[in-house]
Image 1 (cartoon, rainbow, N blue to C red):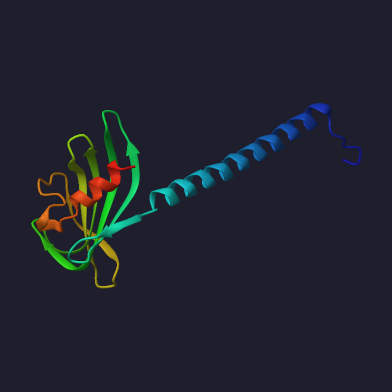
Image 2 (image 1 turned 180 degrees about the horizontal axis):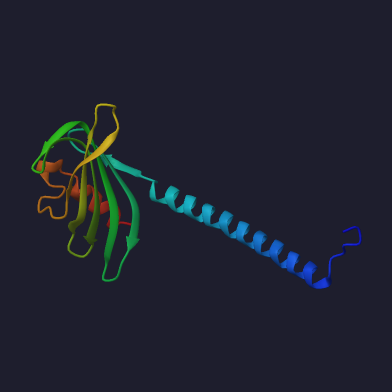
Length: 153
């Protein structure tokens, strides 16, 4: 084995393998960066105001659609645990909402109602897909505030 030398074909194969490893590593790093940026962007809640009861209302991920419509994520953090028409007591509500900016209508496509478990963590206690009273007085009266904020952008 003292006279072992690499052939040009073996060197080329080793170089190709090293190049593949470098490209794969680079792709993995880029993927991690893109995913972390997407998660961070989705988590950017912007407080837009408070209801009359002192509940904090926030909006995130506003997307503009055709025909003067928009979709946004809406979060309401209840100052005190709230009993709503959907049940309760809930400490937070999040919803994906479609806004028709021409008519001022807001229709949630999905709503999640959160409570706290014994350790203090948020737990989804109810999920709803239809809510005719979304944002009206029984739920805190925040619909107009959110609609004006989302459609004003």
